[in-house]
Length: 378
Image (tube, rainbow, N blue to C red; front, side):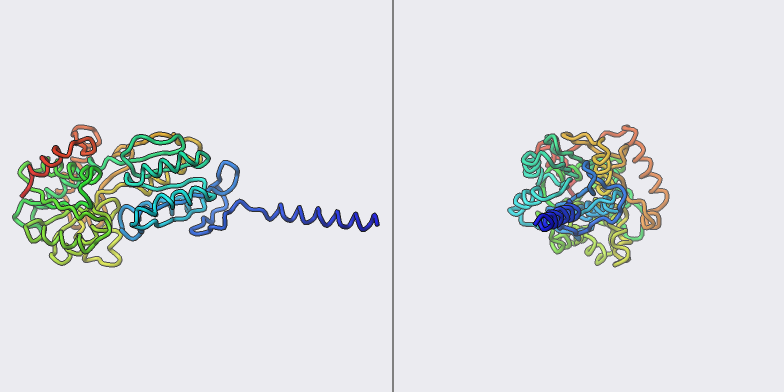
């Protein structure tokens, strides 16, 4: 009887040891899982788990794809377990998705955009045990477990405007005698107009008499609308258009190819993203005004991992912080004349040295933005 009792007790101990040995901290979600066994550890010693929520869909070759590239760097360089969630264009689904993801076993939840900031902040407040990163917002307020970033879009757009003005008055093969450049925004909102005002002022810095055709698509995911509005601008005498319309802006490049005119990309190096699939289209994208979202996300997560990230605040990343820049790829060097490149570099250095002040539409009244637009209307 004693032997039987001892055998049963021994079996129970073995089962308990086996169960403990097989217990893992994973939540069963292995999409985009990092494979580096070193680094990437959360505070408890487990692999850091990082999820990115996209308020839209990937494939815009701009804002969202740049964020996804940052997540990929977090996986590759920090060895984190990662996942991206495309929340789609239906805004009613965003808040429930934030709440659902926050309830899962993720250490860091990342998303971006002023449109999601209010609900994202609320999610962070309701989940004080998690860390949250908003990779692009112009709103200062942040919960204690949230870190916010924004970018000096007015300054990088100033540089884009200078490049556009130099291009339109140059002898580049697709430039015309008209002294008119274009701008296509996704919506008539402060975040987009921050680009616009900088772009106009940069163009005027080069040529006070330049004119700027401005269109808003009212949509960030409609390339057909982007092409339609761009064709209207090109047909009116515009020879270069600045894309600030997300996925809608992909239509600009279609129109540029059809009309053999120039374009300037946004957020990512859009020429580089397109050159392997459509080199003819890519070669018309003179440069891009880049928000270095990918490196910003990587840097923030790395600091969070090291315990050096200051939560509850927003940092503005400009030229000095390497948060913005223009694409100076092989296309830029081949298509944009060397003397014009030198002039753009001169303007950039003045921006870095704060010798040039650029207004920011984020602090402007609607009437002020309207006055700036009307002053350069063709």
